[in-house]
Image (cartoon, rainbow, N blue to C red; front, side, top):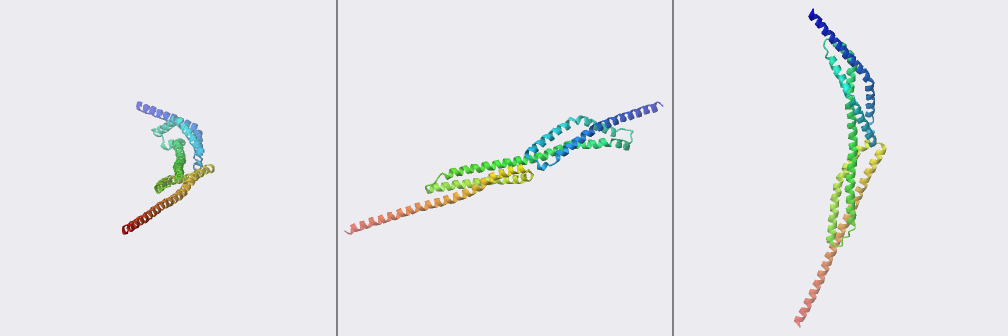
Length: 277
């Protein structure tokens, strides 16, 4: 009888413990039901239209999501307690599994949704970061292309001011033009890189952002085309000048040689005449 009474007391204690845990579970679940619904609504709004955000909108959206993450972190302790209470109930001995599962189903669903809130926020940030990084990479590539091209442009303008007057100077000028041509080819790789990033950025940009991107593209492509034309024109012109200068000297040398030959022949004729006399 003593054992029966002891078992009865233990069973009663288990029932009371289970009942208390269930009351706590229902209380927490009810309190957080509205809170969870609001978080899901907020995060669903964050997830919309991510591919069409402007640079400023993306920054504002990311800031809002980071604020939401801090709100979620502030509720981790009570919600972890709720999860622990749920786990204790599910492991309680002497309870009907089907009955307890039915009673705790709302909590199970709520906990599953809560555990997805953080990952959903981080997924939004990952998408925004990718788009922001893409815009940042394009702007960097665009600036590198412009800097490389304007540097070549400055060198070309300085070179044009120098007018070679001798074949040696003309050949040296052609060599410098060829060096600039090689630099332009290297700058072409930067232009190509900027073009690829622009092609990825444009479809995701809004109209005002798209206008700015097109302006940045026009900036380096205009310089690029102008330099290609100018370098080819100047190179062709100076090669012709170098060839003409070389021909002119060759003609002068040949004329001097003919004159010298004629003089030598005249001298020889005089000498022969003198000898015959």
